Image (cartoon, rainbow, N blue to C red; front, side):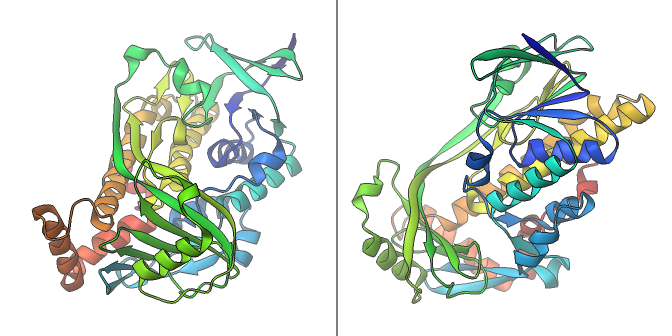
Length: 392
């Protein structure tokens, strides 16, 4: 068995694990990342595509944002439509901030490249199998690579390995409580080679169901339709998808080759404790939000902001205050983001038949949105991301 030693052992080379490693490196703290997939796989895994103002600032501080600023699309607002009536939410007016459209796979490419250039060790195609000795000063992460068992001994463990990963499963079952919602609808999503026919994201409620017009670049669009949880992608031809998107968005789209499509269930999930001993969870390993609010990646980066600060304080001054308060600081933002994501989900999706009590309440919220700048500002400031200091 091979043994490796480092300061911080990180499980998972997604945005949270890579950002943590780079944040620690910036402060002279060594880390090793264990990733069960190949570099090619994680760099081509399509996920979120919207970065909050805070997230971009973090990447700026780590000097990994050159390509982001060259290729990312800055948006100063978005549209929320209700049966053809459109209301623009002006981010710049209400917050003096903006969001940037830049695919998560592009973020991962930039972060991996920076890690390797800075000699941060990423062990690809290595599966973490168990984490031990968490209540000691030297926890161990056991992992296999090429059929061989290895152990990574460290001072702290960053559990950044996603919803199905090992980190959360390692927490004692009596150390946390779960909260979750399974929504009664899913998203049928496509990526297509087509020039966007819109300049900002459009969230659209329609009597047939929700639709979202998003994009990844000036040549690639990302679009979604609300479908039932038991629907199958086999029921939807490309032409049917385009037709229904145009129907719900009530606009003509530039149609192009659909090169990816699938159906994703909608859910909210979180636990109320993100640490045990010297194990700290971040990102999807601790919480999932529905994509309506575009918060998943951004919430992960916010977790890492807190965790990196706590670890830096520990190594520079010996203070454990930031680490002891890690869960408390993260959960304040997690609950706010869960609420916002839940609000946007219920505002925009069809849940009951037109004319029902619930649907008329839903319409009243949109009607209020069209006349209340305070309501618009609330959405804007949550959408671009509340400052880190708010939850300090």
